[in-house]
Length: 134
Image (cartoon, rainbow, N blue to C red):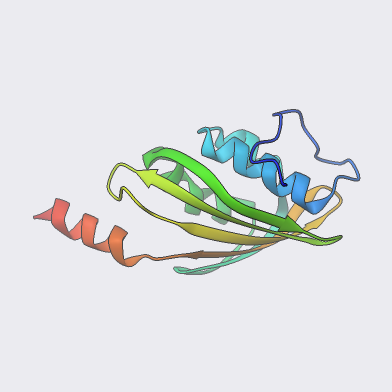
């Protein structure tokens, strides 16, 4: 059984397994600690997400900031990993969308996430934005 939470001690720079890094990263952002989550992000990260490709830690932070600010809670559904990648599927509750599942497949090199592939449904978020706009 895979643990759903990792202690917030840093595994960056250590020879940590990709799953350990991914779970520590998830634990940080899911508790509102974006700075802590960014410690696991490589400066040159490449992220493919529903809005398109993001390159670099600054673009990644800009992508994550609005989501983390609206997050109410998150819980791991399943998590798996091997020597270079980890996959985490999770449920999230946000203020505008009460049921927003997502998944992230990450590649980890030297304790940092160098590549991320995010999957989530943008439609409920787009609908919530449209409803709020009136």
